[in-house]
Structures are given as C-alpha cells and as structure tokens.
Length: 219
Image 1 (cartoon, rainbow, N blue to C red):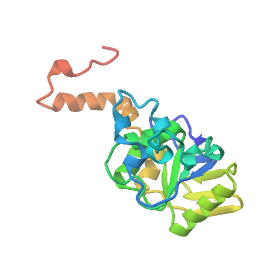
Image 2: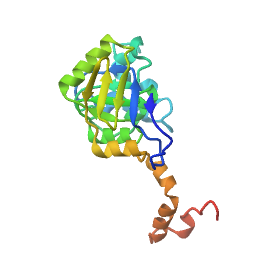
Image 3: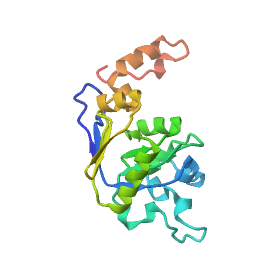
Image 4: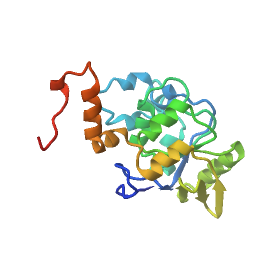
C-alpha cells in the first residue's frame, strides 16, 4: 500500500510519504534491465500487461517450465516491496523495466544501490528507490524469506524502514524524496498544472507555429 494524499502539499500529483506491505527478495548484484524485462516483450503500444513478463527468462525455461524464482513463489504473489542488492537496474535505460515491476505489483524498491537512470524511471512512476548497506539489505531479505506475510513500512520522508521489531535507517536521494513528498514527481501532472506557463514558453519559441499551440479551454 502506498501512503499518498491528494496533492494537498501543493503538488499536482499524489504525495508518496510512505509505502507499506509485504516483501519479495530478489538476490544478486548487477541485475540489469534486460533481466527485469527482456527486450522481446517491449514491442507493445502501451505498458499494459508487462507485469506478467517481469523477470521472464529467470522465471521460465525455453520450454516455458517454471524455474525457482521469487516472482514464481506463491508466498510472494501479493508482495509490493522489492528487496534487492547492488547496482539493480543497470544496463540499458529502458523505462519498461520499472513499468513491468509496477504492473506486477511493486510499489517500492529497497536495495544496496541502483543504476541512476533506473532510479529516475522509477521516480517518474512514483516508486521510491531506497538504499541501505549490504548487511542491512541481506538481513531484510532473510527476514522476508522467514516472514513472507510480515509487514514492512517505508517512511520516505523519515528515511526509515520498519519490519518485525526493527526500524533501520535508510537513504532516499534528496531530490527524489522532495519530489515524492511534495507530489511533484509526475512530469505529466506538472505540465497539466502549469499549462499557461507551457503555452507562454511555446509562444516564445520562433520555431513553434502559432496554430500548433493549443488554445486555452476557456478560449
């Protein structure tokens, strides 16, 4: 569950102040975006339905037989907090990777470190990417394995993760935290909230024809 408001903090998008739910551990360093969503599943008009293909080649053999993988494990099918290791989301910059994760059900990712572009693509969807040291992450992953129904709460603004009887300090990038907590992470919503400013900027650009600038709704 994502803790969000209706944008009462002044931002045009919902605020993301905390995320709570159960966890799913995916272990291993340098898990790249091709592992998260293989390229052959990117030939889509919309992102709808990508969730079923998350980690597809790690989850199934060439004969479509299931492998052992957390995303196939019945214990984790309702999970929404992904716990990963170092350099998660490296490789190509495909935005389909976080799109696949969010459509599988992931609302937040806690890990040792993230590829910068992957973290930026997550932010564009309102998904916090929270970091902690190796030992902290391994302990969280082990706890999730032992308590698949256990509640995890991520306090984005306070930079903590709570589970069981523990609360650990984590880090959220300053710009990401500000964007999520103030509800300014959604660039589309930002543009819609500032349509007149966008219109004025378009008018000032000599290469934008006047008839290409949308009229105001009340014109």
